[in-house]
Length: 89
Image (cartoon, rainbow, N blue to C red):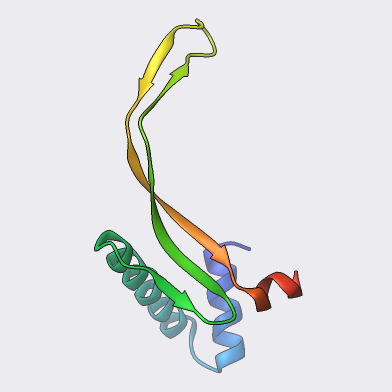
């Protein structure tokens, strides 16, 4: 399912226009991004938790040349499915 299909599904289920559903989805994603950027986490009971994880710097290998390269440390977004979501899959 892509974003357009999700917007169509939300609009149909909620009885709202696609424009309103798109605005709601954009608002949700923006709120999650801002919260994660600020170091927080977003928990939706029964669905899951969005959080930030730190990935340490490490060495890797260029698969074409076999040369060792350094990979910088970075923050990555994580999602952990809640118990209710996991049981329905």
